[in-house]
Image (cartoon, rainbow, N blue to C red; front, side, top):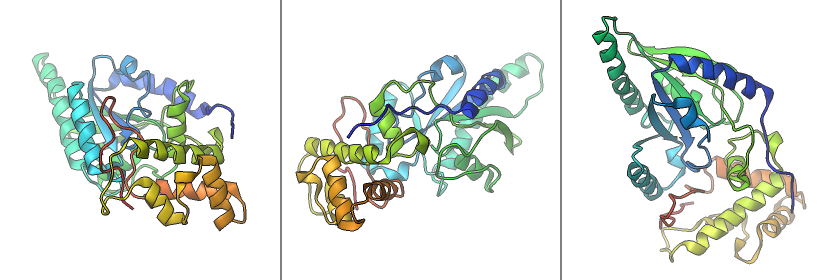
Length: 302
């Protein structure tokens, strides 16, 4: 199965990026939000250039969708890189209070400098940056404890910049998801599509679903044998759809699934497979692991 390269750079993102770069001059702290399932694929290549010397907090959202042991692996790896990370689950509010405190703490240095220059303290100005659909607006709503900005599990909901007052000490700039102008790493682009962190118009469902099965098979080949209470991702697929992926390529598995459940409609089968993963029906499954660290022995649970 083949498909054109995955590319998606709608006009509203290009326009918002230009406006964002202007607003960054006013920012004290950058909250960089990534998808915990794919922390490397959801890193914008220009983020360091944009931020410069500004204070930064790295946030891995959707931590509920990866195994705890993989979370620990990422925590260790990022600390080794000199970048402590905060883990959140915006849908349930996990880790959000700690995020607010960390942002305010980062801003204390800014107000100390203002005090030294004879200026009055002001609220810390933070911006929430990240790819589409990684949960930025949901985090802001959790911080406010009420729904103020639009939030949904699909890309492109936030279309313009908006300042939101969180407290007397913290103001947040809600920004649209930002994508690179060119997605040069197609493996990373496929992961974005699997996790729904890019618009549907950018990819072919069948290609992405077949690639997802191949990703799971590759992970399975690297993992040690499991106990009965730690089923593999492949076993989760077999339980869910009644077909074990071991004997099939990703494309052939999709064909088998479509014939068994959807009268040969591969598009419908592909969408169901991707939807089940995105909603957590297949268990906690990471698609990326820290470089040089083998996948954790707890890769998923159905």
